[in-house]
Each structure stands twice: as C-alpha cells, then as structure tokens.
Image (cartoon, rainbow over all chains, first blue to last red; front, side, top):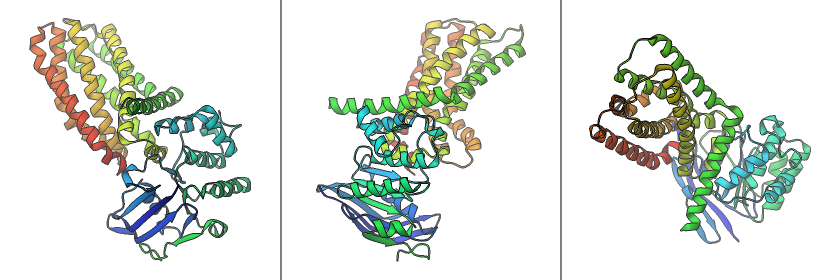
Length: 213
Length: 227
C-alpha cells in the first residue's frame, strides 16, 4: 500500500502573469506535505493544479498508487479536496450531499457508512438539515467529510482550519493523524501551529510571486 | 462490460436525481419557465384576438415561445454550479461525460414537461389548425431534443464567462438558426396537414443536427468543463 505524488517543474500563469514556476516536489503517504507562503504566493492555485482542477502551464504531475501510475486526467475518485473556494449543495442535506458525491463517483455507499463519516466529523445530529442552514464551521466540517468519502489516496486541504473552532481544529488534527499513513496529505496553511504540527515536508512559496523558495 | 454499464448508469442517475431534487426545492427553473410560457401565450392570444393566423405564423410563434422559455431554464444548468461554487466538488467527483449527459437528461425532462404544457395552452388560447397530429407529435419532440442538446452545450460555455447575459444569445444565434428554420418549416407543413413525404428532408436534417451536436458536445465538453 504505497502512494506517491511527483510534481515536476510545475508552472502556472494567467494571461502572461506567472503565479508560480519551477516547482518540483515528491509527496508520499506517511509524510504530510505543507505548502506555506504569504497571501498571493499561489498556494491555492498550486493545490488546484495538483488535484487536477487547473491545468499547469508547464510541468507534469504523476500519481503512483501501489506501483500503478495514474495520469492527471484520471485523478477522479482518488482525490479528496477541501478549499474555501468550494461549496457543497445548500439545498441538499448533509446526508444527501455525501450520498450524491459517493454515487456520482461510482462508489455508492450504504447509509451506515455515510452516517459513520458524519459522526466522525461531528455532524450526525445535523445530518438531515439543509446545508444552507449550517454555520460556517459546520460547512467546513462537511467539506472534510466530503473529502474523506471513498477513502481517497490523496487528501488536499487548502486552509482546512478556516471557520473551525477549537473542537473542529482538534478534529482536523485527528483526521490528519489517522489518514497520514494511508494517504498522501497536502496542506496549504499559514497557521504557524499547523505548519509545526503537520509539516514533515515543507514547501515555502516565495514573497516574489512566481518563485518557489 | 455489464458491470461497467451499470456503474455508468448509476452515476448518471445520481446526477439527474440531484438536479431534480435541487430543482423541486428551489423551483427556480420551473417557475421561470412556467411564468414565461404562460405570460407570453396570454399576451400573444390577446394581441391576436379573434383574427385567424396562418400556419406559418402559428409555427413561428410556437417555436419563439419554446426558444425563450428554454433559454431561461436550460441556461441555469451550469451557471448555478459556478455561482454557488459547487463546480469544483462536482469536477473532482464526476467525469465530464457524466456531468454533460446528466445535465442534458435533466434539461430534457424539464423541457419535455414544459413543451407538453405549452402545446396544450397554445391549443387552448390560439386554436391552431391541426392538420397532421401524428407528424406534429414527431416534429415537436425532435425539435425540442435538438434545442435542449444545443442549449445545454451553449449553457456550459456561457457559464464560464463573466458576461453571461450577452454571450448566450450571441453564441446561440448561429448554432440554433438552422434548427429553427427547419423546425418551423416542418411544423408549418404538419399544421397544414400536408403529406409526410414533404418533410422527410426536414426530419433527416433534425436527426443529423442532433447527432452532430451531441457528438461534438461529448468530444469538446471536457475542455469546456475543465478549462
């Protein structure tokens, strides 16, 4: 059960403006990988490129799971992603959201399995409430629940503690500690405590936009 | 092979179920489609009064109503994903072909119900001649299928743009013009009650149009959805 993600010479630019370039890194299960840097350094963009939501301007990303190479356009179903830019469906309940995402991935889950994930993220009691009625912290925990569906081998967490209270932050630490042996975990954060806690490998994006330092 | 097919159908069904569930809870598309269809039909019937319209005018009015009603509903399919920031989650979970076909199927279900209602209201308010009913029941669903397929693809392209309102008619006009010329011509012939042989070419055109648009959409949707 090995998983490794190789990024080689990644570059991303929009309309000629370079967001980052020359990024090469290897992320493995067992060693959470932390991306840090000032606002505008391109942390979120890098994570979107890695999980396949954006195409890199140059460079390549390759995921290797148990000796099998998975190309960028085959990443569906292998990646769990949490981001401030991503929302769940407000007009569905938390249970319906998770049920939908599991089914549309081609891995429908039993009700008990979904309820287990909701219990893990402390949302079991509110599982039949519409997500639109959730607080921002509950929505963030639901995003975490969504990212854990189908046991993804790559877990990408962009500012995962946003809107979380102390209890929620502890939950996040537990999830990372529990998943880190099985999954590649990549976290973008500026929280000093998280960098110290999770950052077994660290990528510091530079002050000058467009360069990894 | 059977398992792969079942899996594919399950994924498609999950997306269609989600779309229908969301729609029945917000009723955004249903309400806007219904409002447009009913108000436009009532206005036209008042404007026409007791005068008798030619079958060419009836065919044109029917398709103008169906076109604008469809644009107000079908266009929402992708825009709502972008507006509510749900597209990232969907893109990571579903393949582009599932997303496109799921949205297409959902739009088709909504538009079929709307077309049935518009036809009934049109008969009630404007009393058009019904020369060849079986042929009319072939031409209208075929035209609506083409309209929904092209509309769904244009909606996907427009959803990524910042000026969605102006881009939609600009993109839709050249793509839908040949469809409307043909379908209005075919509808006129069926209302006149003329022979089936007279619209064989139109029917063949509509089938070809559907095949071309659907194939091109499936091939290109990956780029539209992911870039």
